[in-house]
Length: 228
Image (cartoon, rainbow, N blue to C red; front, side):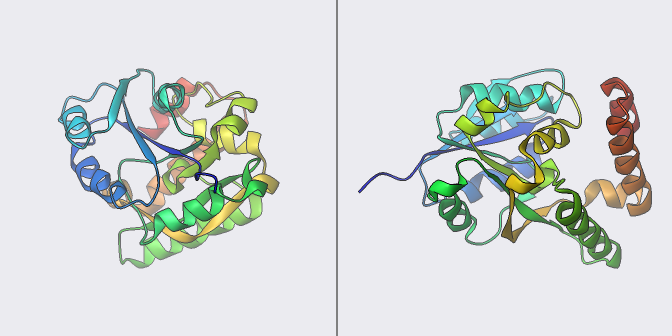
């Protein structure tokens, strides 16, 4: 019987010690052959030390999330790559969803993402979740905070992770195409901190503005200035 495909989990970090310390132990429960990579963007906290403590491999990359993810991609051993934000909480049985996807030969030219869910009980959080579900269903535009599962071979054929500090996730899923994106039937919990800090309406407006300007061809440095 053939061995199941291997999986590299790639986590970009920048001063993410607290959420990273909560995320990495969740990966140890996996019934998968895992290669965990933390790609750090110059953290001043204990992110790198926490990664090493949990036996994750560490690489360094400056210039934003795109270069960080690309550095992780270049270091990865796995047949499949799972790009995951540090402030995520994995759903129960997450490894079963991934295993079912990566062992299906029909999926090698597809990519998958989890449903978007915030760690907040507010009505604003539920409203935003419905908006994200509509965006994904209608336009095929999941963001990086939903995770992205893709075979290393397929990603290489697409040219790898785009070298963008911001909107690298949108650039990549547009290359993949809506027809080749699969929504997994489970939520990936994301920290609501930035929405609670900035306000749901204001943060959502900033995100939408960045998306609109990206589609209009605005320089990435302008998007980073707006997004910060």
